[in-house]
Length: 199
Image 1 (tube, helix red, strand yellow):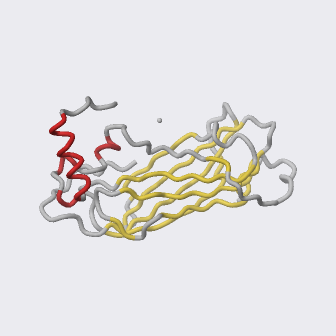
Image 2 (image 1 turned 90 degrees about the horizontal axis):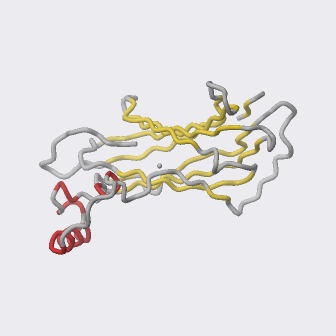
């Protein structure tokens, strides 16, 4: 596709710490609700941000056409599991081959949208990636998505959108779009539906 012209909790008492470790080792299904593994993410102890790094892969697509500021010659995402339960982490893998004008002052953003099987938008989260995508080349990233204890079972779609704008301009230009799907299997009996804290 072508476009032109990131609170730490206090350290727990030893008894509580041992209980938490045993609960985690035995799996989320047997842990009390307040000890669901994804609470570490909600407390800021797990990095949920996207971190692109240079990949070994080398692709050759030639120079950018005249007047083109950036181009995503390859952009795709995938997940490490097709089916997942609440209180577990889904890994979103990303691949990008970016060509950009080295002299243009560009700001890059990536937006993740999560849709339920009926098309309802569950959550949306945008990150700025300007410092990570500073040059043309191949990039890879893995982002963790914690599945909340109260997440409803069903099929979900992740849509990832990459965009850029010239520094100082208000409107972004779409650069690429990719998607992946997964299924949340029924949560453990006895839980109630509350806020769905996806990012």
